[in-house]
Length: 283
Image 1: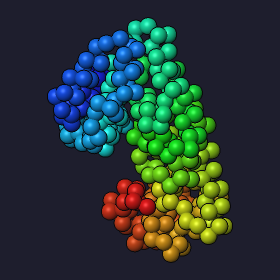
Image 2: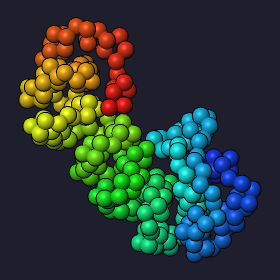
Image 3: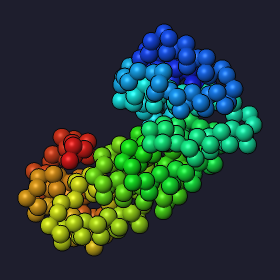
């Protein structure tokens, strides 16, 4: 897989850099690990600031190789750094991990972003679990985004506790949670009831709850959680009403189906496919 990723990342990168920049990167890719690591740090001095816009076919191919992974809207430096890491020799585990650890231990903010972005393409994924979990506690928004959004590593490797912490922090900090890879696949009862407590705290403070939150509750609806959904249905905020309808629609809890039937217009809209969670991703 690493060879495929390396080749595709270079294809995308090559379309966004000059010939001289490409020559510099190719030269550094073929040097010693120490020189490659030096290039990782020095990249902003040799590469221009451009935004990566892969072709649709490239995005689809990347997602096929590594589901959920995306380089859309990355900068050239960020992608170059991840590509350089994919060039590291992986045969000697101790040496390989030592090189990556050194970069983590000495990284400034933008280097951290590239390192956490690279986790899905690094070998020995279990080795990076502590660092990835630690990133969730980061006070630097861009570092948290690098691990939480469009990054398949947490969904694949995080414990339930670490996963729930990531999702909750994303919600607390008003991040677009639909960009969390594996969001619905890793829903769990503990998270659902914690989100209910979160909603009660928000409501008590006169604040709203992002409508997307309720997509994580559908599978675990019971009488207690259904009382939250009833409150959404009578909200003056239309997206709350829509979230309530979607939550009930996707639930197997019969009282939820009965509740939805009391709102025939919303029920019809959901059943006809004219309303989905995608429509609420802007809130």
